[in-house]
Length: 95
Image (cartoon, rainbow, N blue to C red; front, side):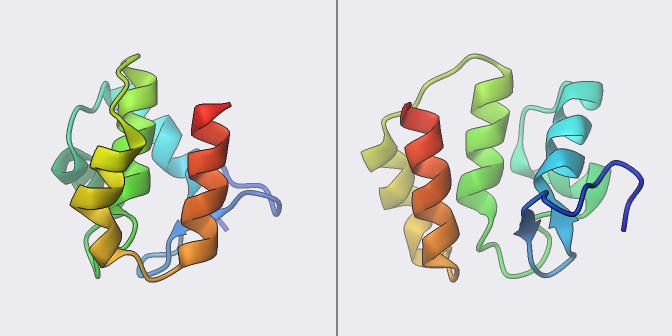
């Protein structure tokens, strides 16, 4: 387990076992603006792409941007394999 991870931290990228905290820390420390930059920083998103919607959500949150959830779901949902995790994060993002 990465030193930045806690056992309660969600694994966002299943392919590379990258946690939410690791991803958010990478975005913050590198002022990351794209999914490709996230992948370069911590490998997340470099496999099946199922986590791309959450990576974009985290990037947008860091930069104070808001995209309509319908647009994000339209753009990214076909890649998502873990449906339960998506609904949890979308619910957190809208609250």
